[in-house]
Length: 149
Image 1: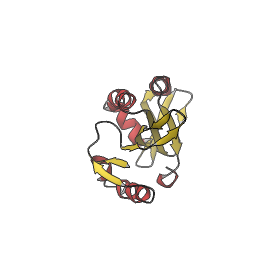
Image 2: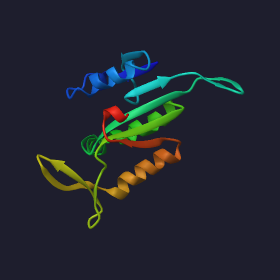
Image 3: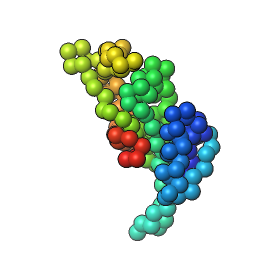
Image 4: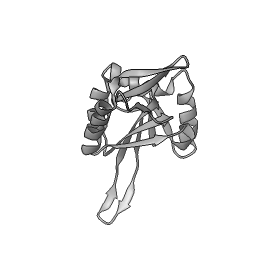
């Protein structure tokens, strides 16, 4: 069963609707508030030791806009530890074009209104956040679009 965060399901850019349609092809979907993550999945896996019921949590981040917004308002600092605490396996899934870096300045490049500029955040800062998340057992994946999720 998939649980979709009610905020994610109601996004204006139709990602929520598309996400629900994709997931409903595979499993039952329930829209509900989630404390951490945009998608939660619980399932059952038969192992030699018996039945394992893992929970998976997914935080979806559009790149670069949502990643930058999460850095600006500090959501990354609460979301990621919460994901590790709440789920057996926690994922950050970046959706869209990969982040780009201005290697001269070390800053992540942002785009607004067809203009590119250096964000106030260095790649080392974001990489440090990701490294701590992975060291605690989290996984980071990148997909080009929702269909590849």
